[in-house]
Amino acid sequence: MNTSTPPSGPNKKRGRGGLIITLAITLLACVGGYAAYKASDTMGPVVSSNGNEVGGSFRLMDSSDGTMTDSHFRGRWMLVMFGAIHCTDDACTPALTRLSTALQAVDPSRKLFAPLFISLDPNRDLAMNLRQYALKFNAKIITGTAAPATLEAVAKEYHAPIVKHPDSYWEYTYEVSPRIVIMNPEGRYAGTIETAASADEMEKRLRALLEQH
Image (cartoon, rainbow, N blue to C red; front, side, top):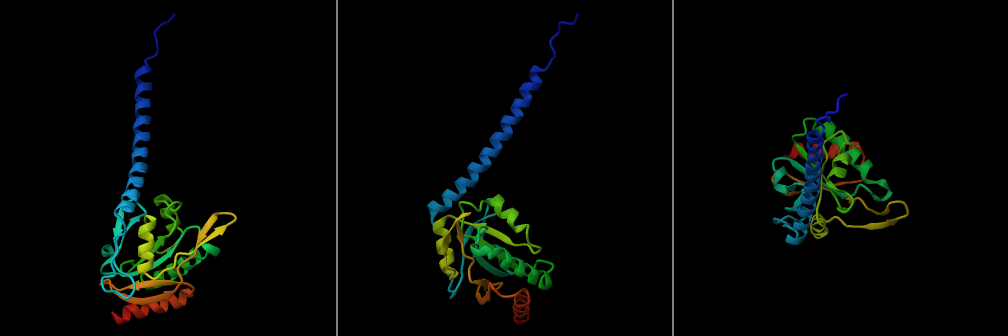
């Protein structure tokens, strides 16, 4: 009769150790994202018009829990739109789809334009959710958000109203901005595109920008 004990103790300990490390890393990632959010809120908005009539500089949290600023997009036309994943009348997704269609026609290489979708709902539109949302579109839509004080300052700088509505299903929604603000490759205000414009109208406007610059 074999009375020896199977040598499973050390393996079990190593298994538990690996699980604990994985959980710790996940927790640190969550804490890091929250810390970045709170730090942004504490430092206050970093916004400047830079002499622009509309638009200017900003610092936001991107969809990887890092930060992005307007200077990251110098050399490209920046197209700035505000809204939320939970968008009033579900208007954000169709608008971004039309913009994506126009961009695919005008800039298939994705080197000329930087389309930004800034979420006004940082409590629900976390980095992971924004990444998944951006996958809906053929063009690369750059997503980000910020602490409420920063969002308020950036939206004001870009003349985008923040309108929140109660919703029986989602609890609340945010309206999409009525216009997409255009900043030229040097970071200067260059006009707007109506958010409700058709894909063809958006494409025509984007082609006109490239012809004039």
